[in-house]
Image (cartoon, rainbow, N blue to C red):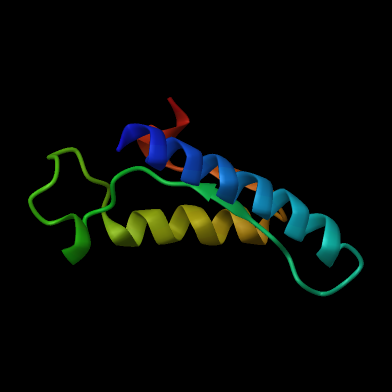
Length: 78
């Protein structure tokens, strides 16, 4: 499963890059976010060092406001 997960993340990265090129010159801003484990119902029972959803949203909104194209959130920065 690690191979499928890694390949999926790589595919999403390349998709995001291609979408950014296609949207250049339009009002659409493409932000690629690499997220840590966020404490949501989907992650219930998985891990203990989860990021609070409101903190994850704050970081994403700040990256959008700054016009960034990539953001590594929380522990994903490591």
